[in-house]
Image (tube, rainbow, N blue to C red; front, side):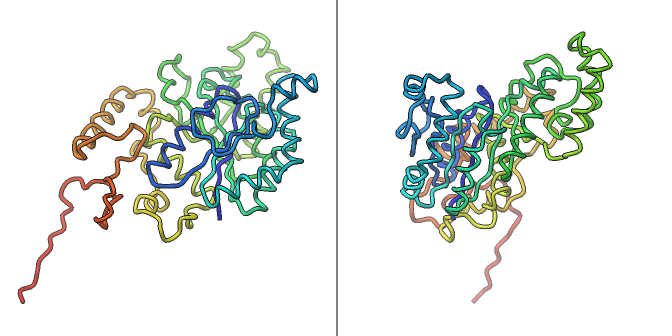
Length: 351
């Protein structure tokens, strides 16, 4: 049973960067992974593209032949893909049981009210794929209450439209400390707590928001989001391997990968750990990690990674899990290097 991520998000939210980083990370932990480009306008990808929609249809050709703009051209491209699903199905069959990441376009119409993308994913489910929608949002939206509320509405609409297991992610979380101070801790924004506290800040943002009419509208929107109770966020910095590990575990739970991946009995020790351990996030207070003491934690993690590289006699990348190289002989290959005294003593009986 193959598994897949559907990477959604507005332009600039970091979808292609995420796909590239997750592809590298999965390769480092020994999970076979393929990336499928579903953006007909994306002619340059940083990741190795296993399947590309541009082999079927290109945005520039649609715009030239049908006199459509960029947004209309993308919608037309997905209607074309929906009517030519055999092309996608044949391409995915060649990938066999590889874990697939679908890099989707940034046009929000595709996952808010247009049905083609939704219908395509439902057909993939009929093929046996276990899908998880990963919706990315730029953490810059936290800097203004109006941006944050708008992003909540967009995220909620995407969850209702796609009707799939959904993981919402605030990307570029490492940039938050460089913005103006936020009125609340990061946990307030990730947990989507009592939004009524934002109403006064919305009124300060623009004079038009201070009228009674807009005040009632803001309260109604806040109540709408809270009444659904669906939206919450994980945080991600692609360069930070701990956030990548944590996010992959969340996605594995949402899609059912924790109950056994396609690799089956051939799973490495690291893959089993990725499925079964609860979390690798050592810092539960994300406000402390990414805002209050970000520089201290960055220095501490860099020091730990440098120590690991010295222990192994060579370096792996910042986003890789520092595994012991597999020489084919040691049954414990693939396990993280031991740290400190385990406290276990072996006593051999005299013969």
